[in-house]
Length: 236
Image (cartoon, rainbow, N blue to C red; front, side, top):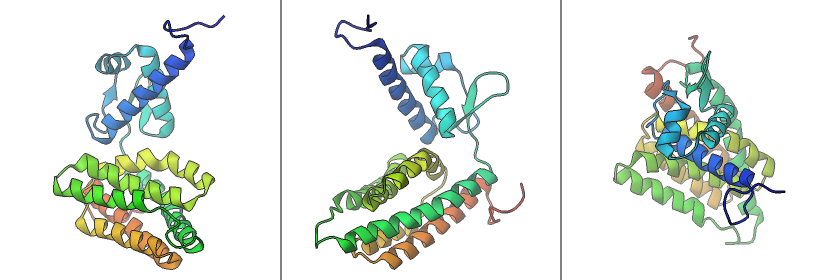
């Protein structure tokens, strides 16, 4: 006998999973756009009230976000939004840099190996245009989302499922990091360079421009988060 949550025959477990996914997405977005600031404690009951949901899917969502690294468990009970320390940023860039460079290599290689105009670059181009519009309108949240989507589209073009799954685990942590720093105009220009080299099928130039971009991104993150020019390898 199946237990259903409504008269439409949908199993209660499926409904709860769907609600949990909705809650996870809503809390993620509030973390990224800083409605839930770094270090703030999230109370399950209060989050459930805000989202107008029961506490069960919210509890599942918070547990999932702890596993993703956006939240951390408090010593006795509850969770809080993770505060990024210098070591956290260092670890993230140590992983992201080689993966981002390899993604651009593979994406450019896919273009080079395909028949002319056979690779659809419209989604990647649209990310650049969206970021420029958001910057012009001073819409920081949408600009962050556009920059994250740009890197995700490069991974999709790379055509490597294992790379896609690995990068998916980093996506929200990167978006959180991007949202906590200003995005200088020259970094948008670097995205345009990356696009140009990928579209041309120029593997080495795509890799080199991506490496430059990621290392500039790291420098900007250090300045924005820690207010200095010190290396990420400086002891805390």
